[in-house]
Image (tube, rainbow, N blue to C red):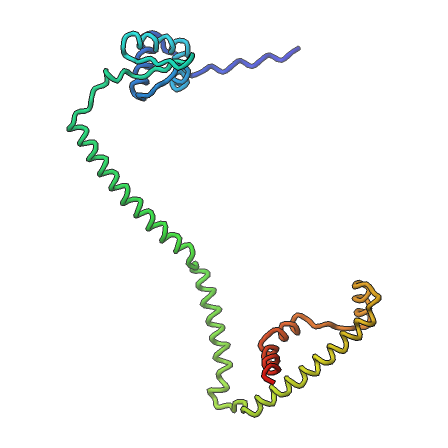
Length: 238
């Protein structure tokens, strides 16, 4: 047995007829004071007056001079008869202009205040929070303690490294770095000859089996750092 269709929900819209419908349509057109068609008015009134009834009411109101009818092609539009609209007195118009100016000035002040508050809010959001400040203070305190500990020997009168010792350290560095560069060049030339017939993967496997260690990231960092720059500058001076 086929299931029974569910009954349609009843609409809560109250349909108006007669004079009530006419008054509603006329009041809406006057209040909006812009051209409308029957379809738009019926839709804007939430169907309180059906489209066909709205069309008849509009035509009746146009015949009585309450509305003005304009036809474009097959579509008719209706607007309130401007001759029936009461003109605003000059005093009332001036008062409205003054009120508009006052509201406009207040609005400009509010816009400026909003801009200032927005800028302050942006700065506050960019500033560190209390938790972040506490972390930064802790880190700075630890850094100060570490630096102070490094300076303590100097404060107690510990002997400093002499200029001669510094020169000897620089000389040793230049000597042994030059030796390292020389041996590395020899290895690279030999390794190129030994692995010329091998693929990169095979050459890498051979190096691992022979226990060959290449420069680590730390070695590369030292070579590219200030110590390596000092060596290069000395070579240029010579």
